[in-house]
Length: 279
Ligand SMILES: Nc1ncnc2c1ncn2[C@@H]1O[C@H](COP(=O)(O)OP(=O)(O)OP(=O)(O)O)[C@@H](O)[C@H]1O
Ligand SMILES: [Mg+2]
Image 1 (cartoon, rainbow, N blue to C red):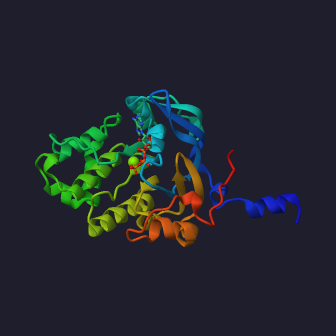
Image 2 (cartoon, rainbow, N blue to C red; image 1 turned 90 degrees about the vertical axis):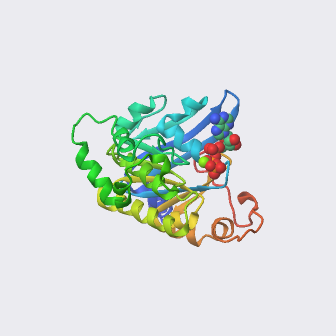
Image 3 (cartoon, rainbow, N blue to C red; image 1 turned 135 degrees about the vertical axis):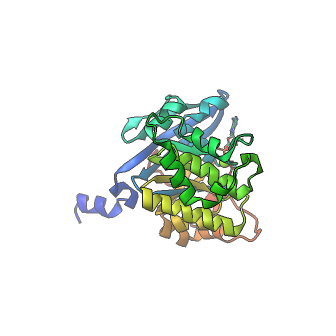
């Protein structure tokens, strides 16, 4: 086998597709001293759902905030590396300009505005839009989430599941190309988790929205994603197609099994090998 053939065999699936988002060797520091992302790299191919898995404190939310420009509000800063969206560098750009470029983050804990109505929350999602055609999009959101149409009171009175739907609906109002979702399953009953993930899948299929999905519910995330990354302590430690990850012994033991079993450090597992690809 010559060199080119060998390179072909080794090429990862994710590298064969055009990337909408590329995070290259990114380092993030909070308050000038706390190093949280330590050279994180990942790719999100156009039109796909990519899962980002990891234990509490691994740096998943920080990764999303680095992409959406929201680190600034938390005294966080990208000190190394690049974030590229459709080939354009996003580092240092203000969050509202990043929304205008087509990236919308659905925050952890939903963050809807409790003392506004559902409709007002949805309109807020369209704040960057200059075209006046917002009514049609509101109807589209109600099409995905019929329950929201019936809720005419303040958003604060919605159930947890309905608030999650509103948070996703609000993102749709921005007509995003890429949606960053931070733990959409958090606090939802198994039935609602299924419903929300079904909708995430439809948004990807019907509207062609690319999704970077942060989740602790690995089983659910890998069931809708085509590719996945596992991060630990601010770095990617494993990646592969959703099927590869779902069948990986370490992932099974650490994220898919467990019933209260003690969580070992991922990197201490026998079959784990740190990958030096980006270093
Ligand atoms: N604004 C901040 N200032 C200082 N440290 C922070 C800040 N935000 C997060 N951190 C620290 O960065 C690390 C990663 O946090 P992050 O919220 O990104 O993790 P996560 O993977 O999203 O965790 P979880 O699963 O609990 O949501 C944690 O140790 C956290 O304490
Ligand atoms: Mg988080």
